[in-house]
Length: 342
Image: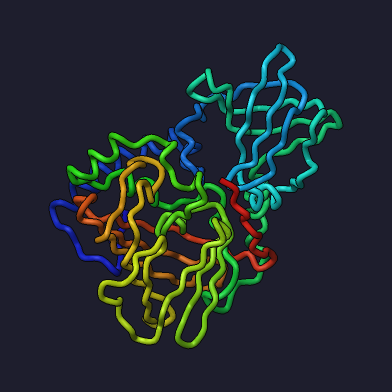
């Protein structure tokens, strides 16, 4: 865990956090799969894979999740949750990849509640030998990164490479909570996530989602768009401050400035959210005092954007959260419409 250029040092407290960081890091290595989720996957045992075989009963082609239900050969119905439409499309799927009435063999991570008869989709094997997986385009893209031309500025289309979260989730796992934060987390259940009702995820978690992002730069304004819930952030670069008693929104109010070629974004006025961050410490809410600072830095070859994050929320976090991650330049991709259905 490195000290960000946009944050102060924390002295002895910082050393204690770093020691805790080391312990959580090794736990992270064992729990990598659950962290590769845009929704909470705590309802599934991602360390186990079970094979199911049957006839397709229903396909719900929609975001935030595509669902497939089959009638098992040994009796009963089983349901499989997959990724959203944009991710599946880039992995070669269409709304006709799996159709009602066909025979398939499915691998999935079983749900922790057997009574729900549900699993997280890992792969689909069709009778013609076709194998479909939810996130195959990530691995393909990572092999081709070096062959791509780089961006000339932060403007362009970017994507978080497969499983490449830097120190993001490990750093979040060592953040110390206030009594209010710990109490809220203890009462949290995955069903409380507002993404299920098509309410977007605020920054900085939005930065760590497996979706395309686009940065558009104008003279006095910048836009950061995400496929996830068709989110658009507006960053004012004209020297204004945050409004007093301004409207609180899902993504907050953002102002920015340039330090050389680095873009610094300061965001306040977030609306309340029951679980704005995933992974360890999921279920810690955010409130009226949430404050986020981000630094976007372009790599020398233009292939990556390094993002440094600083988050403070004194009502729920006893120590600030800070981390880094990187986006990869993907000039040959275009953002897809998310089209969320609750």
